[in-house]
Image 1: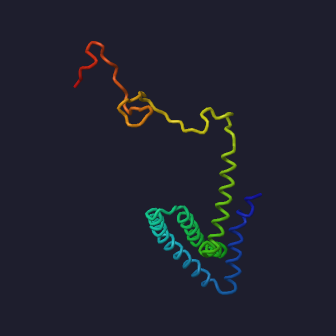
Image 2: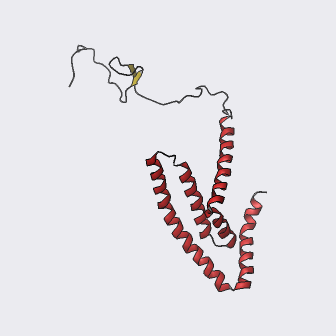
Image 3: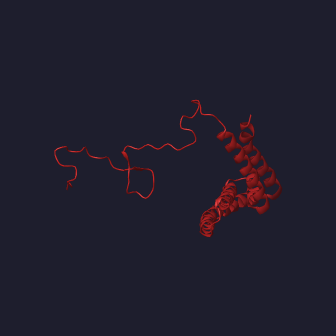
Length: 176
């Protein structure tokens, strides 16, 4: 049932273009659609660089870049909506570019994502209880040994495999 509006959307856009073209003329509608495509492409190109600069600036000042990333995402969605021909998509793109409305959309989206993440975190594994608890699990093929010369207490995991010792040579001699 959710697909029905999505399937009817192109027909609604086409019907609206025909109605508006009947009122103002077909040439005006065609010029409007071409102009919005050009504006959308240029905005998308500009916003990509501008949002990356904003994220880098926030990272340098110590602020969280999440807000800048999400605002850049909504502006990019607005630019893509401008590229898609139609008056309804142009209206939706305009909504993405109005700052206070964009912040409202971002708040609702973040709240929805938080609820989904909380629901996902409370789900149980399909295989029953997680045998590892809440910790991290790492695969490692090397050996683990305690290093007394290490400044940190704990186990040192070497990154390379050890060669089997040759028992014919004394253990203190150094090999080339």
